[in-house]
Length: 500
Ligand SMILES: Nc1ncnc2c1ncn2[C@@H]1O[C@H](COP(=O)(O)OP(=O)(O)OP(=O)(O)O)[C@@H](O)[C@H]1O
Ligand SMILES: [Mg+2]
Image 1 (tube, protein in one colour):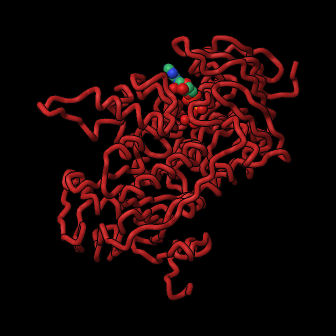
Image 2 (cartoon, protein in one colour):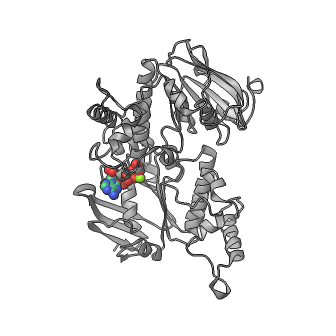
Image 3 (cartoon, protein in one colour):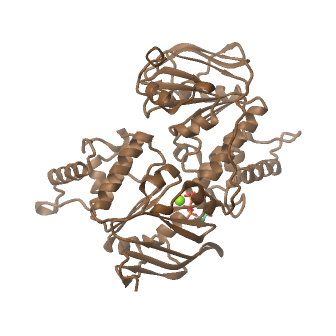
């Protein structure tokens, strides 16, 4: 049956501790096809793929590969059948080289059973070349950008010559131009006849790459669209299950009152950064990866050393030499690599949200109930999908973990909030909700800086946009001047004089 399919998953059901996560889900894939899997955070996408790769066992259902029933019990079973996955979280060993990472655990052996380093390096180099990836195979992985690591992960699984490749949000940490490169690589693999399952929250990329798209909602199969039927609006409706999908509209009104003024800020990565942030304003910072956006935030927040320059808060000069001081001035900063730095994975959801705001009652005793209430409030506001605030964060889906960190920073009650890539890995509906929350905060007088690689996000959410290139601010756009072209032009280093 279904022998023309490379893969056919039939009526898959999975429960975790009695809670259904997948119910009767069907999914199929042809060779040489890109089949996109979409759904809100927690819809069950990663779980369905984990069943295919043998890291999770289904409770019910059948799995057919090349027209034959397959019994995949372990990751090794899946690998033997030619199934490979690039996970949502990167899994490379930072201290090993690119080549070592690619061949980790399957190093080519030479005489006397010793690792044949020469072959290992040349094989790795050839593999990268085939994928048009320019990287020195001797480089340590920790020296690579996120985008480069992502490509190494892909090279690594391709070294296994898979028939079926799963990419779980491969571009969530990439800029638009890097995404473009990765999508070109995916096209190449498709031409080689590899069947590809592609999970993503980015609608523009889905319409570009999908041959088919299947939508899951609350662990159920909603439907599959063929290439010519795929429309963003239709997919979103299927994902959220209603027609009146909220659209985000901001008033773009804020006061003239400066809250934060930065003058001539410089260190080894940034040069002469100067700008003013006003009360109730959302200031966007655009720029390519490595342009100094995150570094600017880190310098202001007291994480990176400042060599020259001044910072004023409410007109008074401050010396923020440590994040603690920034927090004391009621600043908050959610860094881009949130998973590594920010979450206590083994702890329940509630302290992960409330930790930045330990409540004390009038006797100085910790008010656990107050903290839990706060956590519950934000769980609902951000629709974090869990069994409740007692669920351990480790058990949350990728996007719901992201939401937990954002919830924590929103809950800090800051005066100034800096968010670096706030909606990475977060589904379309929840993105809008985060924008709404930011807007609510600014109505209360909070000022926000949003760093984002997604231009349409900045264009939607910001009142004003600064653009950076090579450590400097190269452009500033008022809301009336917003355009994708102008931002891109500043981002590649054209200065204001050239453009206007
Ligand atoms: N080991 C586990 N124990 C308990 N619950 C789990 C476990 N793994 C996943 N879940 C739950 O299963 C549901 C589906 O999670 P899954 O990771 O498949 O979602 P997803 O569609 O990949 O979401 P995202 O877009 O956020 O990555 C979530 O509610 C999650 O909390
Ligand atoms: Mg997932």
